Image 1 (cartoon, helix red, strand yellow):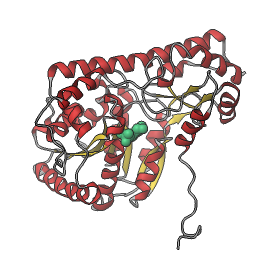
Image 2: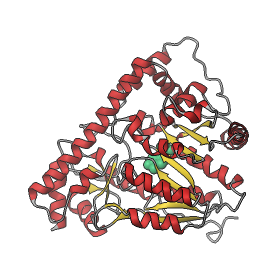
Image 3: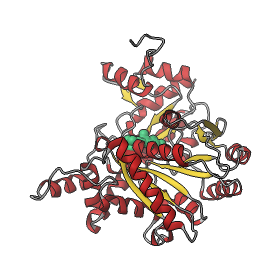
Image 4: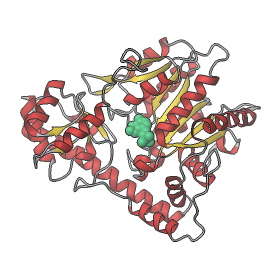
Length: 409
Ligand code: PMP
């Protein structure tokens, strides 16, 4: 009933294929630089100490049960999630211009936003094409395509500088039809690690305002990138101050280490206008219907853990400390890798390793070099030359640098 013409064999997700190959490798030197999750200096998953504490508090609560959450999720979680992004003194929050819905982590938030736009982004000459950075998190392509929204790309990564192609990006945004949907990574761009500077964000906002584009922010690394929650939300806050109507997909996978708990949030922020609160109420009512038909209500445990931390001043401070531990280790590994490559006199420039930020770095290694690193050195990374900084530690960074040196020469 389902012949191959109807259901062709799909290729394996490249990241999961990479993970499998790494697991099967028996070399004691093997290094996993594909992994999209934080690892400590012993290459082990890290349960944040503050998450352990919140977990204990919850487990010792005799009143704890496993009832359903409301459709929009756990209110003490979603309200603090919005506050993290917008700041404590946000005019948008005070004016009731924010609708927040708890989702299945960041993926679910991107999906809910995509679904909402597919259904409602139709009026006043809206262009339904979603512009994605080239490159972007691979899942963006299929999430938007699945809901029937056309996708296009804007230039982002500059191959020569291994930094931002700001001119190419601005040109593409200016050339896109008015009122297009523009997906922006709020910080720690995946896969390149390249972020616009505050000045470049202002330029991007200016072009987008002139073309009345609709910003769709994806934020999966707040606090994990720089160690500073406010700084990593800077672009989002700036766009809201500029009066944009926009949406935000927010993940707590990385910054809380709650990967498998699927804690996330989707936010709609309406533009300042006399009827803004009404717009927000209407949008919230429709988001609730979409949510109901997709998942009925979101998963409870990760949201409870995050809410416990976000609503307690002492735990919050401890979380900030944990964020600095993770981001600090990653920044130290960037410095170590760049330092060793420069020490070795490896051909090329390596400043981009420390200029880039967050979990990932676009090294500029070619597909052939990536293949050689895998076959000759048991070092695993995606074939576009992206490495996860979290896979580096004080025991393997020199080995990795020497291996890169060898394949680049
Ligand atoms: N967006 C981006 C850019 C990401 O890198 C990720 C994590 N890989 C996500 C969204 C969502 O991840 P999750 O569903 O695990 O929160």
